[in-house]
Image 1 (cartoon, one colour):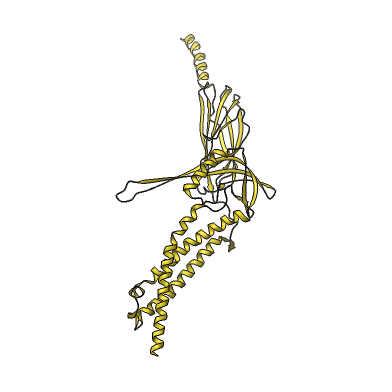
Image 2: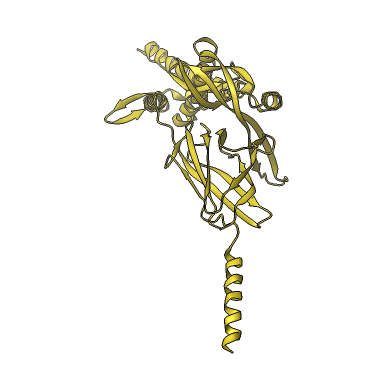
Length: 371
């Protein structure tokens, strides 16, 4: 019996060692140099592939997938590197010694349009011969980019648009009070019966809304037009190298009574660019100012996605006040057609306002004639 145990114990030990021996990638780590990444900023991802087993991991396949809400702008220290921009991934083959590790890093650019979203990329490591694998994901929150526009009051920064909004609200309030008093005077006038009924019955709030709401739309259009004008007149031109590209796909679905659900999809390209601005290198993302009409803009965007591949050099234009604000398509887009829609409403409101002014003048003339 003792002799049998003596023969079995070494066999069990050898079997146990064989079970735990081999390639073990479970102790690998992925970390970043930032806790959160501001929109439009670059974060470095550090990857340590650790082989805790007692067998070298030869011919290990590494696959890094590009992020959806950002761009892959640099990846180093990987041999036999292959990049597939259509599938948005990078593949390589590395060797990891037993009990050793292999380190590499890559940089991700958070899109300027994806604040409050998540920047993430998938990392897959495979050793098919040793049947070892590692699937992990790097993820980091995209925070709002620090703003340099506006005025700082009491430690708070107020964007110029806030002052325009405040002025519009104050003007609208004063306009309502003034219109309410004029209409009330017209209605209570002893000779108001000689006036048209629509002048006496039209509410002050409705008249103010007919004028102020279209004006708000036109103010937004004026702000966009000013930005587009600046890209043509004061923005600086530079030569940019395309580092990565992505297509932003947005689907909107709406349901109307008695009709089938309608779905519309828009596709907008966005490019990660590297260029010189004011004697410093800038890495940022952009395409146009956002005023392209979807019908024609999607056609131009698809042509740009097909033609502008990573590594290609193209002209770009950046804002001297904020060099990270960059476009590769500039000028006025077709979206200004939509800002013509409120014009008939504004015309009707001004027409009603003219009727009220005419009614006041008519009553004043009647009072003067009686006097």
